[in-house]
Amino acid sequence: MGDGVGGQAKSRSILIAGAGPVGLTAALELARRGFAPRIIDDGTGPTPAEESRALGVNARTLTLLSACGVGERIIATAQPIEHFRVRSGEKTLIELDTRQVNGRFSAVHALAQGRTERLLIEALSAHGIAPEWQTAVVAGEVADLRKPEVTLRHADGAMETVRPDILVGADGAHSVVRKALGAGFPGEALEAYFYLADFRYEDPVDTHVAEISLFDPGMIGRLPVAADVIRYISTLEGFESRIVHPAKVAEKTWASQFRIHFRHVEPMAKGNVFLAGDAAHIHSPAGARGMNLGIEDACWLGWLIAEGREQEYSALRIPAVKQVLKQTYGLTRLITMINPLAIEARNLLAPLLLRFGPARLALLRSVAGYDTPKPPWIDWAE
Ligand SMILES: Cc1cc2nc3c(=O)[nH]c(=O)nc-3n(C[C@H](O)[C@H](O)[C@H](O)COP(=O)(O)OP(=O)(O)OC[C@H]3O[C@@H](n4cnc5c(N)ncnc54)[C@H](O)[C@@H]3O)c2cc1C
View 1 (tube, rainbow, N blue to C red):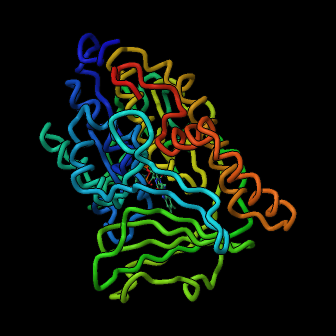
View 2: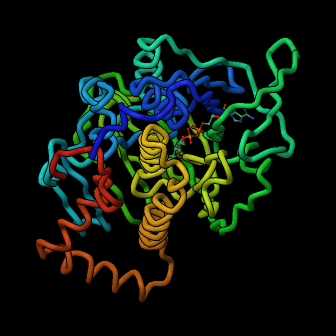
C-alpha cells in the first residue's frame, strides 16, 4: 500500500481550520506529501505548556508521527510511562508493564500537549508552512459543499472569503465548521465534574508510573507531566488534601475542572468538508485517547486526500471513533462507580481477569491505541 506520495493533484487548495494537535498533524501529513495547505487558528499561539490538557501520547501516535520525524522527537522529550497501576486502598488491582506491548514503542509516553504542538509546528516550518494565528472561521452556513465557501476574520477585523477545494474542520469541540455543516453532536454528559491540578516539585520525582487510586466512591489519577511535575486528576472536589506528595511542592502550576461528554458526529464529512479530532468526537480523558484519536483522524485524512480517496474518510474513521468512545465510556464507569456491590465485584474480578495473558494484552493494546484499524500505509508490525 503506497504512502500516497504519488498521484493526486498537489495543486488542490486545502484550508485547515484549527492549529491544535489535530490540525497541525493534518497540515504536516499533507505537506510531507507535497501539498501546500493553509492552516489558520483563532488563538494567539499554541497551547501554553503549563495549561496542557492531553498528556498521554500512545504507541499508535508515535508510529504515525514517525513518518514525518516527529515521533522520534516526542520520544526524545517525553517521559516514558513504564508501569500503569490501579489501587484500591492498600490493594493493587491492576499492574501493567507498558513495555510488554508488541511493536517499536512502549504503550504510552507523557508529553504536555503544548510541547507536542510545538514539535509539530517546528516540523511544519521545514515545509515553509506556519499557522496563521488570530484568524478565525466565522460562523455561517457553508454554501457549496463541493467547493466550500467560508469567511475568515483576521486580527485587525478584516474579513476574507475563501473557497478551498477541501476544508478540514479541526477547530475543537465547539467547532464552527461542524455547526456550519448543520451537523448535530449527539451523545451525553456525565453528571460528575472532574478536577485537575498539576504540581511542580523542588526535586525530580518518579515519572515512570501512572497510577489510579480508587477511594470508592471517588478516585485520584496520578500522571507525570515532566521530570519534576505530576498531574492529579480526580472526581473529588476536595481531592488536593488527599494527595500524598512525593517531594516538597514548589508550586501548583495549573488547576482546572471540567464535565465529561461522550459525543460524536456522523458522518464525519459532507462533500469536501471533513471533520477531525475534537470537532468530530469528544469523550472522557480516561485512557488518554482524545488527542491520539484525533491525530489518527488527521493522518488517515492526509493519506486519503493524497490517494484521491477522501470520500472514504468517514466510513473508515467511524468504526475507530465508536470503538474508542465505547472503551473510554466503560473505563470511566469502572473508575467512577458508587454502588458498593458493583465496586466489590469490580475489585474482585479485575485482578482475576487480568491474570490471564489475553486480557492483559487486550488492555495493553488499547492503551497503545492498537485497537483501531492499522493504518495501511504503515508497514511495521504492531
Ligand atoms: C483534562 C483533559 C485531559 C486530557 N488528556 C488527554 C491525554 O492524556 N491524551 C489524549 O490523547 N487526549 C487527552 N485529552 C483530550 C485532548 O486534549 C483533545 O482531544 C485534543 O486537544 C483535541 O485536539 P484538537 O486539535 O482536535 O482540538 P483542540 O486542541 O481543541 O484545538 C482546536 C483549535 O481550533 C482553534 N479554533 C477554535 N475555533 C476556531 C475557529 N472558529 N476558527 C479557527 N480556529 C478555531 C482553537 O483555537 C484551537 O487551537 C484530554 C482532555 C482533557 C480535558
